[in-house]
Length: 162
Image (tube, rainbow, N blue to C red):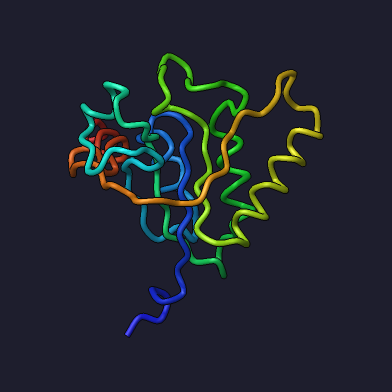
């Protein structure tokens, strides 16, 4: 029996398009599994089209299962901050809309505390000229995106190399 599975923790981040976010975390040692989906809205069982139509309130998110003995939540947060602009409200690059907002969905009180401290430290560090607008919210119902969206960039890149 593989004991590592019982020790896995979850982290959920919205940092713009979920394909890019997921792809960044797929590269991290200690990340065991990733998926993309929707969280933070008030519309049950949304489809991709529902979310991009901006009628659900959901964010596109990557959900990560990780081994905390290999990679810490703090390290995952450092990656989260690095891969997007946390001062950009409801957009990342050319992607616009609340579904692309910067958001950390915490799964435990400890994650909430670590995320809030990390955000405050980053704001105080003066790296950005504007305020960090990243939301920090409790994890809620997670709706898995369709299979075609899962590991999309990794699959696309591997087919290009063939």
